[in-house]
Length: 189
Ligand code: GRF
Image (cartoon, rainbow, N blue to C red; front, top):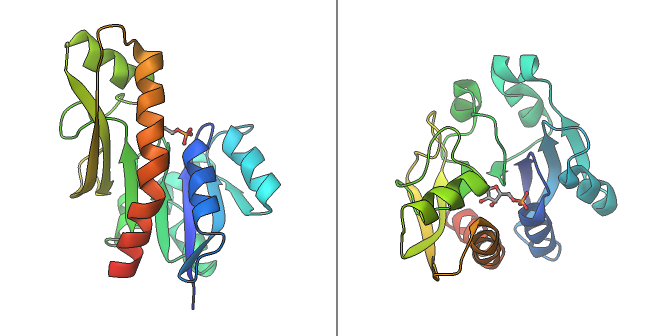
């Protein structure tokens, strides 16, 4: 029986698109739900185009149980955070132990935590004159960007780089690695 994946995203959804594409011809999993907290987010247009069920969450309901009951009713086996900006409530973590992964656009444990997302991360890395940055794919626990690391990949930071050019390098790493790493985790599960 194919595993049913839910993608949680708040933004453009470029990672979501890559993950959806990757599992289109997969024998082990399929993306069956896109969960979003932002009406009009690009990821919802992707779900529309791909004919994937959407769940637009309300903060109040989300705070109670993170929609854990509804997700299990829908038969969701595994949760992927791909640019999702809300913290995962304890109830959802308990309902999906070791089955929620996140991607962070920096080399955790550095440059993580509340407020460290998108251009803020890239700006901090450049301001601190780091020589490299990268991505971290990790299990999710009750703290922001804190669970066990599954995979990291790096990219160099050149003198002319700004948050925009660094973001492009990071997105390339994300799109190349995230779908594959998810598949490896699912096969190991
Ligand atoms: C990615 O950079 C990811 O690392 C971070 O949020 C961003 C999502 O981008 N968690 P997109 O919406 O997948 O294009």
